[in-house]
Image (cartoon, rainbow, N blue to C red; front, side):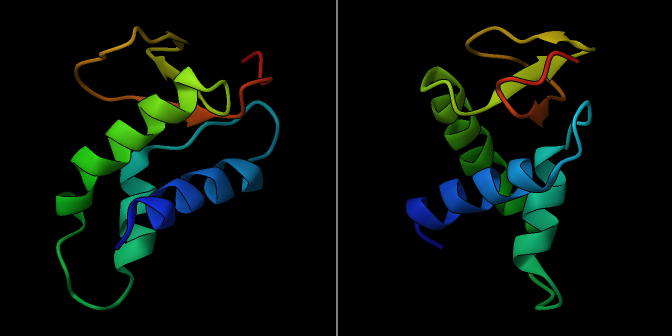
Length: 86
């Protein structure tokens, strides 16, 4: 799985969200691994890193507990469209 594949998967998932909703990066990892029986957890670190990079570019919004996350969030995060005010 390339870096471009991960970025594309994040942006595609964000694009499918209804306004006011968020997604967990783990859902993207599960979707990417599909039925191949591979452990989706191995994708979590690179997915988080790419989500943070996309947020820095203004393409993704990252929240924790419903509030904007800092540049290096610890723990669970949620992803949404950058213009989503939820």
